[in-house]
Image (cartoon, rainbow, N blue to C red):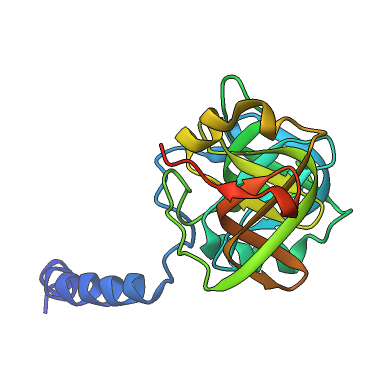
Length: 214
C-alpha cells in the first residue's frame, strides 16, 4: 500500500485514540471564574475567630484587626481544617466600599502560597434557621456585616446575634460596639460556636423586648 494512502487510512484511528486519551485527562478543579481571583487585592492577618450561622454552619471569619471575610458554608470544612484561630490567613476578594468586610473568592495560608479558589461565592447565601432556644449576652465586639457592608446583627465573645438589615438600622445606638447587649431566639451552639436569630433583645436578659420587624 502506498505510504500516503496508509497515512490517510490511519488518520481517523489516531484522531479517535487521541480523543479517548483526552477524555481520560481529569478536568481542572476550581470555580468557573473567567478571571483569576488572586489578581484582586489580598487581605492578610491572623484569624481571630470563625463565626457561625443560627443553623450551626460557618459562613465567615474575622481577622484580629476586625475585618470580616464572608464565604458560602460549603467552604467552611476546608477552611477550618487548614486555619485555626491565631493562625495566619490571606484572603482575596471584593471589599465593601464603606465597611471592613470582604467577599472571599480565594484564600491561602499566606499570599506567597498557592491559593484555593472558592467554588461558590457568597453573594446572597441564605441561612437556615436555628432550632434550639438560646440566650446570648455580653459586650458587643463588632457589628455583623453583609457582603455589602450593612449591619445585620452583632458579634459577642459568646457568639453572633443576627438581625434583619432594617431591624439593625432601626435599633441604632443599642448595637454600638462596646455596649452591653442580651438576646434570645432560635439558634445553635456547636463546636464552641453559637449563633441565633434574635426574637427579643435588650441591654440585659431582664430587659428583653420583642425585636421590631422592619
